[in-house]
Image (cartoon, rainbow, N blue to C red; front, side, top):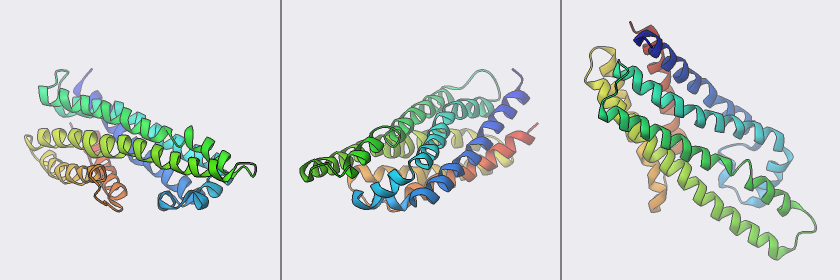
Amino acid sequence: MSNRSVNRQAAILLLAQFVLFFVPIMVLGAAIDWPASLDEPISTLYPRFVQNLAAVRLGYGAYLAYSVLFLATAVMTARAVAGSDTLSPALQVAAGFGIISALARSIGIVRWLSAMPLLATQYLDPTTAAATKEMIAITHVAINELAGTIGEALGVGLFAALWMLLIAVALLRMRGMARLLGSLGLVTAAALFTNMGGMFGIDIGPMIVISVAIAQFWFLFMGIWLFVRK
């Protein structure tokens, strides 16, 4: 495959990541006031969740597609930066981190398409006993903490950040616009790393949303550059 073709394919994937990211934001934002509602107690979250279940499934389905797509995006971007079919050891590791990131994030998102609808339906059933509702609340927190740690702290905060860091370092070794994108990549990687704070009891506030939003604009700029790169 020619370098031009690799650049175009990587560019299309990066631009698709940028566009697809806004689908869950719009759909889930309208349906359940996402992501602010995730911090609400389940007595408030679950009724809205069940009432808009079709939209929730659509939104999280798009978020899952976005995460799975990153697997291809991470690998093709590494190939485009390499400029050949042979990746340096660092870019091979970067591609590996990208693949692991996609898998970890997918695991984190799946909870909203499988376990959470089941828990919400059971919780809102008028025949469900109070003791059972208390157990559902505990289960919700446990699943949310585990899957959130896998998806956000590891998938985004560690593996995606490491992918971004290695790609940025490779770009800094090039000339022109590549070096600027490399510098922006370092800033983006640093922002993504902050998402690991939750694993250690640090309140990161809205950083998961802010850092991922920053990454989307890096995808946009990187995609445009690769698309016009000769």
